[in-house]
Length: 360
Ligand code: PMP
Image 1 (spheres, protein in one colour):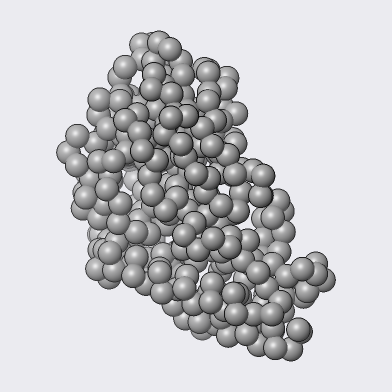
Image 2: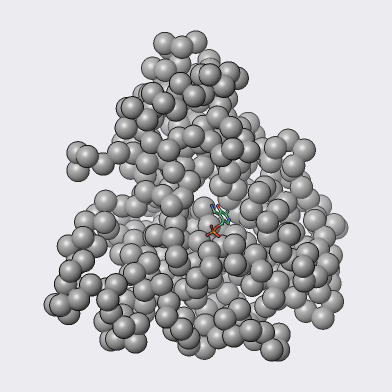
C-alpha cells in the first residue's frame, strides 16, 4: 500500500501488512458471526477457537515440548519481572541475574523486593555494548533460577550462547521471540511482551515448564502461573483482540515458512544494515563486537549530535520513521523485527549511504 511508511520503532512495532489487511476485512463481521472479535465473549466458541489456534500455531512454530504450558497474560513483560520470582523463588529465596541493560536492571529491581539476588555478570561499564563473559563458578548452585535478557532492545546486544548452568534459565525474549529457532527445552521460562514480534501490546506470552508452576502456596490468584495454566489463560477476561491479532501473526509466519525462513531473512536484513553503518564514514554501531550483535535492534550514531538530528529528520521526510535512538544511548536505532520488509532495510541502507556521502 503506497501510503504506508517504514516504521523502525522498537515497539509497539510494525506488523505484517497482510495481517492488518485480514484484521480489517474481518473487523465488522468475523467469520459470519455478525460481530467483531472485539465484541465477542471470551467464552464463545469463536474465541475459544481463536485462542486454541493461537496456542497451537505458537507450539508448532517454536516446537514447544508438551511439558511446557503456553500462557497469554496481561501486564507486559514488566509484570513478569515480578511474577517470575513470585512463582519460582524457593525457600532459600535466591535468584541469579545477568545484567545486560535497562530491562535486566528493572527485572533485578523487582526480585530485590522478594529475595536475595546475585548479579553474576554485568556490562554496564561500556554502556551495555557487549554481552559479558559468564564464569559458571559465579552462578550460585542453590539459586532458584538464572535470569537473562536474550536480546537487549535498547543497546542492541543478543546472547550468542546460553550460560552453562544446571539452574532453570528464565529469559526475557520480548524483542527476539520468533526471530530465530531456539530450543525451548533449554529454558525454564520464556516470556515476551507481544508488541515486537507477536502483535499489539496488551498480551504477554509466557512459556513455562510445567514443574515450575504451582510450587508456591497462597500466591494471589492473578499472579500465579498455575491459575492461568489450569484455566487455559481464561481465568478472567484475557486481552481477546490482541490474542486474535497474535493468531493472525503466527499464521502469517507459518505461511511464509516459519521461524527458520524468517531467521534467514532477518540475518540478511541485519547484515545489510550493519554493513552500511560499518562502511560509512559518519556512523558507528553501538555494538562493535559482531558476535554480540542483535539482528532485531541496531543502535548507531554519529559523533556529532547535530548530524544525528539531521539524519533522523531527513530520514523521517523520506518515509523512514521512528529511527531516533533510546534516550540512554542517543543517536539512532533501527528496529528491524520480523515484520520489517527487506525493502525497508534496503531503503534505509540506501539512505545511510547517500547521507554519508553528502555529509561527511
Ligand atoms: N523487556 C524488554 C527486552 C523490552 O524490550 C521491553 C519493552 N520494550 C520490556 C521488557 C518491557 O515490556 P512491557 O512494556 O511490555 O512491560
